[in-house]
Length: 395
Image (cartoon, rainbow, N blue to C red; front, top):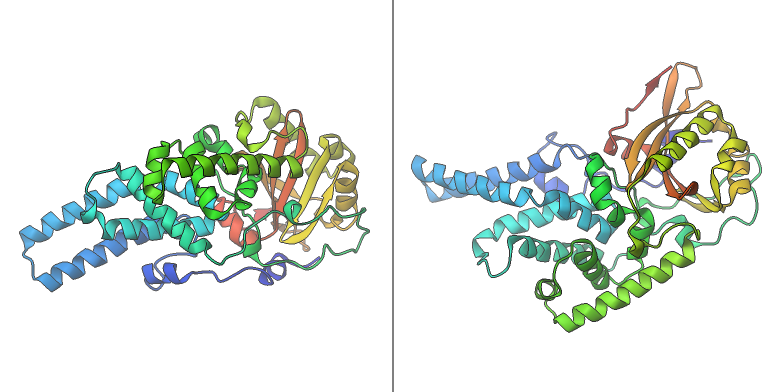
């Protein structure tokens, strides 16, 4: 199999968007989605704008200080909404990298027009109006993101050793994993970022998608949603009903019977589920595929993003890892949280035996006492930094 660099080079899109370039000075930030540059670049932009305005207006020191204080206060007020806004934009766009760009654009637009905010609605509603418009602009003319299981039937049979999973597809085709840094987010936000729910959202028309998120996830009143979307309450209620029906039907069509539908709001991972995830990691590191298969639901799905192929059932999963995926023998797994679920960064052993290198991110979908899905993401150059995973493990 190809190296991580070779595997990713074929399908990773541009590293920095036009929006990001417009906000970052040379060498002042990393690629979009890294998480480390987002807040500083917004503050830097505000500082540059206010500094330029003060210079152009020839304001004295006293007025400069007043303007700086007001600008800082506006930034702090807007920043309070960033975590929630980012989750909303992730649901709309299906990518944490796109969500970062959308939130950044939202912050800039909100700060630029903050003087026009008259307080007729709450600041939260006003900011969500801007974020919704940003997302709708980004979605215009763009194909929807999906999971491999949403695009095709499972592979008709086990793949033999040496078989390739097909040609990788571009990164903007796929729903991408969402990193959870704070365990409290898993409890509060698990439903809104579950891969199955995000996938169901992508099947909706963009405005229906926004209505469902604003009403059922963010719990905004129908009247506020109608105001921020420029429509009537009756239209919002109608769109919400259609969106609920469509997401439930889509989830039921592509999800193992043991997995709750998105509208059922599952509980956060419990001790039993975390123990099951630990057993998965232990079996994988021992490369005991018979034991791993025993942990799987009868309809469990294994996907290999960015490849479109996916497999269904314990026998197919075991055959994959003991066949084409046998190079994973001897791997080590590092636990993380993704999309409200247990996940692992997989590191394969170096050819020279000196350590372990990134290979894939495994996101587990656990239903009851079985694993219903294993979503693996092979673009480690993009996802491992996002999840705070190291670029190498020592032997």
